[in-house]
Image 1 (cartoon, rainbow, N blue to C red):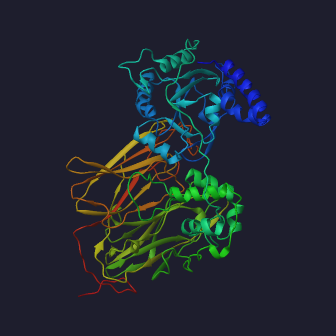
Image 2: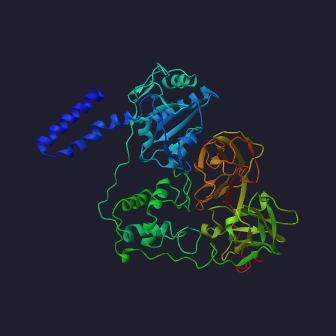
Length: 612
């Protein structure tokens, strides 16, 4: 094998020969330089003992972070990984075991994903699949790998508390691409970490890494010249303009070519990070009828056009702009609108206790409703709002109807097309639990509720339950505190929807179906929960039938660490509470009785049940 110096000298000779024979002069040196000098250049800025001044990467929340965000620790372990490398898959459990062996020693593990095809959601899901309490980040441009001198996966780099590189190399020599030793001959990474923790020199600071070579993204090419109107507009109209159009809550419109090009770089970033269109379910588990996400083919088309000359093309090539309801209501024009009598004042600062309101309408007859929408007149100050019906016996979780949350959608049962409706008993009224948030100036707000009644025969009644465990306490600085809860089905259930609500420490939530025969199925995984986009995940009727006796289980993790950019106070233990500085675990499950056929007729103008 040639050493680095010999390779450099030989590449120079090859460059001279090529320039003499082919007359390509400087071009040959430029072509050869990345091939022959890349590794030397990479290592020259990442020599053992050198201090790392800065690093930049994206966290699982798609927030740009840096070395300083990791906080102060005696040792930092950067593990370069992908979701595909077989050695990474075998090494992740060994990393978890090592973390356990190190106990409470001040070591921070950071998994740096360098997979060209891996998304941020993929890496967040990997943390769940292996039940790892580590920080996971994305190194899109390989700047972190280059700065630390990593060239393979899994490769490990250890920094001391002064951010100096003390070790770079393998975990140990047990796992190789060609086979496996029964036991490692030396625990290279563990020994290096312990030497750093004890202030000693690292005896063996660099070891050979036998793993998958790190590759940058493959340049994409198209066989034809893409144009906005012919190739991009159909995707934009299908996925974006529902929200990004005039007179909506979206910050800008995406109707025209000019709209798109003026926001092109932001669009590129949010598509890459999968923050737009908003959708947070792992595609490996479940299919949902309201999935807003882009397909791989659609992403490729958008990236190709954004990386090209951005040709507009002919406007006549574009599809017709979709027609949207001319209404301020997302459920269409309601059959009944009920408005709060009082207008609430919201102070400029501080916490606002929950407000409880009974709406001024009594349902004197049994009433069936197909769609509900909670509509604040000043949405900027409404953190969330829950609605239930109340009778002379009061309200409870069982009388819950729906809620208004950031980024959520109204309850529209008509979208299921299976004759399902929500029953409000006679003598009931609607009640609201409102959580206001302050925005720096005194505000006012009044809330309306719109109802749309069924126009066809009602076949099914909507049922639900809430997984809402109590009594837990999240310890200070815990990056992945686990909470779980379960409920056994009393019907043969046709699952229609799943929804989760947590506060700003919520990291993920996964729903499982545990059948009585011992089988376990993942129904929904939200690996990187986003408090600003609390979405409901709707299933097509008859797509997921669960037998009576099945246990629905939800497992969530909460990040109370300093690395959580939204954490109000990582030094504080956190329990259940209504304010954002507290936490909640709410896993909602909506379903119908698969064996039920009600054949109920209602007055389409009032929703009142008609007597046979």
